[in-house]
Image 1 (cartoon, rainbow, N blue to C red):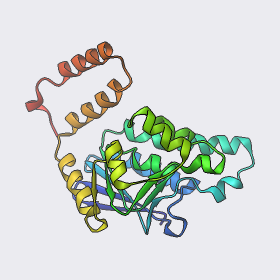
Image 2 (tube, one colour):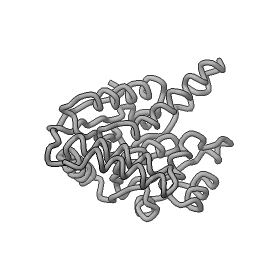
Image 3 (cartoon, rainbow, N blue to C red):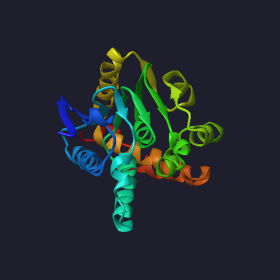
Length: 240
């Protein structure tokens, strides 16, 4: 299976499983991941998702070998649309996602690594956007990057194409924790268990409001907060 699924209590672990290709995202894996994220979000019993990679890499980004063979413009557009939908899915989900970055996360893989709500990174891992070194642009993944780190740091990452180590990623706010590879999954699952314990309506409203206010002026964001406060005043009566 190109994507492995495992349930640990209320946590679903999704593992990118193309280790021989450094978990590069071809159409099949991208489709499977998008479908699995949506499926997990629709299941009441799944309260958090952990995303990681098999083997030495987290994700090498797009499968360049496959992309070179996509000559039909319509097929190329469809593949791009699929990638956009994947990166958009995380912010649209009610269910929180923790990424466990076990190894190199490059290009589209870097975008995937920081797309989750929380991120844990192994000390030995690196993350980067090497597209300019290949004469192309980190186009789709740039949108999320500039929302998460300062503009100068984001431009350095996408223009120079040089990867950063885990400690630098932590300093930039790309990840929440750095730990040894042995502690990666226990740390990620620790986060996941805490997130899974939050009542679903509260988590749903938190994620919705978080992503909404991030793109609004202060006055409009405060109004959205007030609207949410009205809906959620009686937290004690919320059902799981």
